[in-house]
Picture 1 (cartoon, rainbow over the protein chains, first blue to last red):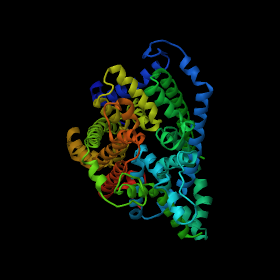
Picture 2: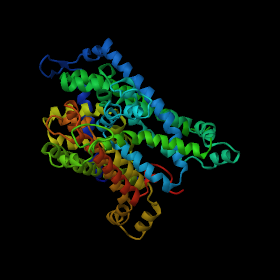
Picture 3: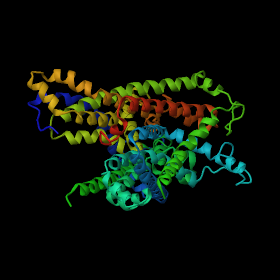
Picture 4: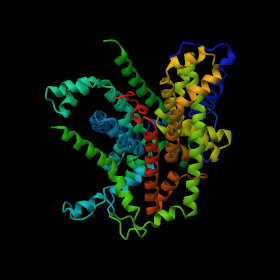
Length: 285
Length: 264
């Protein structure tokens, strides 16, 4: 990092454009959204300026409370599953030679960039009666006739894991690949298997990264929005789905804004927690 | 368990990732308008359909236009920001960097709703400009992170040597900084491009009813029943993303770009 400070006001000029863009198109929209969340919803029309807490009050109702709890539950569950698989996977990946890592990384990135729409469509095809896995199982004699496994909670959970997996690999990858190679090396010399080395050496050393990854994936999964509609039933709708539903179909933007602000505070609290975890790791022992 | 065990584990995970894509690729080859796997009377007619039907072509055109321009705008915002924060130490630096990273960290529905109320207030709700600018801000994180990574890998002594030999700011920028970070600029653009192509919720909330992109078109068609064209789009997107990231890996150092140390 440089220690040079800009001389005079003119030296700050290059910042005007990026800072202006970010403030105008990111900070201002958030400001408007915060304001709108206190506005009054006019039946059959748009909304009018006001200051009321009704939108937040309505959120405490049983219906949306249940949606919130369900969002939290499925996000935590899928985050835990994904991290449990992605952590050892990334460890083994980083132990490969660079040349061997590259095609796998390209594939992971390609899956990561896939639209949620495409992931939802692919999974609903894979779990469908006509084209799905159950046909293969019938062919193998494990099922009497093909069945549809979607929409269901299991299908949704599977889809969310699929969505979060490549993201998790990329979050964990830096810490894993910077792990001192002598640690697992020493453990291997003493005769431990890769799995044993992983659980007794790697996991304890990277415990804080592990916790950080669980929280990051949890927040990421909270944003899942199309999968609950494609792979789940209406009771499986997450908060993200309800926010869009209120904003686009019910035209109740103040209420949608209140829910979005709530979801944001919630996410920020958890992201803050990862930063605290990260800071305690940096601190001298 | 041995080394074989870890290879087997990786293989199973990769199979899980590839599974749905294999089925979709198979389904896209059906001869009739059915989603059967394995496909019946394999043919490529749905691939031709994607490039012949005006409504799919229109959606593809929108998606490409939005991805090209919004990724360019994202790089144009991220580059000066990353350069300035690398060149100078300013008190507001970390705040601005945080603002640049925030859109990508929060659940996207929040940012999308923010854009929605903003464009409604400005009166541009439903226009393609709104989608382009929103995507640029939403994905500014990617070029910001890659360009910052590139700048930090420049040896400061090279810059100092140039300065002592009489090169001014502009000369240093065009002869040292720009050539050295070009691969990072390109990969930042590519990341933003591919993700914009696949993005749904921001595009939908900002102008989903007037500007139909490919992901929006797929989701809208899902309600009226599945056709193999959707599978074709999924295959094309997957191959395209693999091609772009493969090129980045071919001409750059992908592991380093993703945060590994520079050498084995």
